Each structure stands twice: as structure tokens, then as C-alpha cells.
Image (cartoon, rainbow, N blue to C red):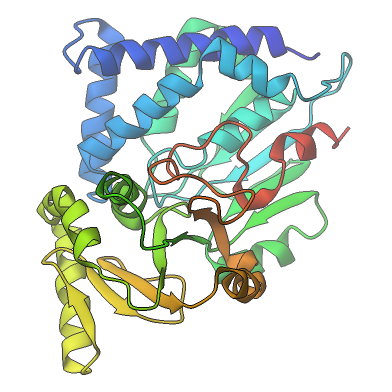
Length: 349
């Protein structure tokens, strides 16, 4: 089973540390909590899209997911080889939201392989800190983890995440290696018009968390014909503080100006623009919407776009939907693009 028990204990320790850090309200006085607080501040300074609140949010998420119970339950669905020569897996990480590549990092290690990480320039502080902590817990883990800033060399497989353009380059460049290549994806929400204000308030988490930059961020609403957006606007009002982030505010102002100059019909509540549009990927500060008449017809309409949709937020619309408020908190077995990363890595032999 490779070093699974050893890895388990180390990552559970990490989860406990993150939980203590988050539960203390960041007032813990131990050395590692102080180092983490500095890492959070540095990550924010280097990338203003990484707000302190959002970084703390992702740390709290991982503190909950890295419990012994959740990790053991996740791994129990797989058969890990007892005797296996580790492969070296290169991960080219994205930097759209904090620690977005951490799940791939976990999968490589728990599959009994070693990891070679190429960080995004937008997210180069948090993961090295977490690895530093892991090595302090068990120095042996350093044999399994390496970082590189240069050209990737000496690897057996690749997991790469980027835009549609870089994805095509990755597919060509890494065609000779076992690989998972991830491109642009967005998430959608399907409303019936019968949602309570509480449900719509939860949906705000799926729309605005990480400023809508994640692949699990809802970028488009499908609403029934004649839908009244007043209740939606009322429910998401607590998110108006999002304008305090100057990068979000600049994008919102710019897109609003473009739409107004182009005579586009928009709905605007002062911090997010709703625009009727056939597209799925909306700009920052904008939420596309589209009317539908029949839910069955909508399901058929969405099929050709399934390759561009990460998840569907709804109630009783699709079997694999996620409830409002949960899109940004996937379980360990909620794999990006529907590709079982851990199974792919185990099967490399």
C-alpha cells in the first residue's frame, strides 16, 4: 500500500493544524501559526485577487476535508498496490484561486507516486508553506515532493491546468506521456423561480466566493421565463462588500461601462451586472442569464456544452447536481472535469 498510512498521519496532522489556526481566529501564538499568518499576508500582497478572507476560507475548507475519517473514506474506494515503484508526476498548477492545485497534489502522494510541482506565479506562497509544515511533521516526506521553476524534466506523467489555449499546447507537448489536461470550465445554476430567499442567499456563495474566478464558480443563471430578479438581488445583498476589492471593482466598473456604451440591456444592483447572454463564461463582475420554458428541453440544450461546465447548482434538476451554497466545497471524490485523478495515477503502474 506504498506509504499510505504514513501519508495519512502527516496530512491529518496538517488538517488539525489548519483547524486550530482557523478556530483560534488567527490569534494562536505558536510558531507555525505565526508563520502561516505571514504566508497568508504575503500571498495576498503578491496577488490581490487572493483576499485574506478567501485565503482563510480555503484553509478552513482543507482543515475540514483533511480529517482522518474523510481521507480514509475517500481512499477506501481504491486498491493501492502493496509493492509499487513510484512514478514521478509533474503538476503544472493554475493560480486562479488559492491552493487550486492542492487536490492534485494529494492524489499524487496518496497514489504512491512522487510529485514534481511547477507553481503558478499567481500562487507561489501557500503550497510551499504547507509542504514546509509537512516536512516538519515528518522529514521523510521531502523525498516525495519537489518544486521546479524551470523546464520540466525527468517525469513519468503530467497533470496540467490552464486556459483553452495553453491546454492545446499542453496536449501537444505532453502527448507522449500519460496526462490529464484541464482547460477552461465554468459552473451554472438552474433556478425554478420557487427558491426561498435563504436558498438564493446560499447561491451567493457559489457566485461570489473567490470573485467568481474558480471553475466551480457560478457564472450563469438559467431562469424560467418571466423570472423576477428582485428576490435574487435582495438575497445576495450581503455580498456588496465584494466591491472593497479594487480589482473586482475595476472589472465591474469597466464591464458596466462597456455594456452601457454598447446599449446592452443589463440589470445592475451596484456590485454585480446581470446580462442576458447565450455564453457560459461571464466576465468578472457580471453574471450571465438565460430564460428557459421547459426543464427537459433545457437539459437537452446543455448537453453540447457539458465539456465547458464543471458543475450544475440546482435542486432536483440533474442527478449529479450540487445544492446551492456547496459548489465551492467539494468532497475529496468530487474530481475536476469528472476525471478520477486518483484512479488515473494508480493505474500508471
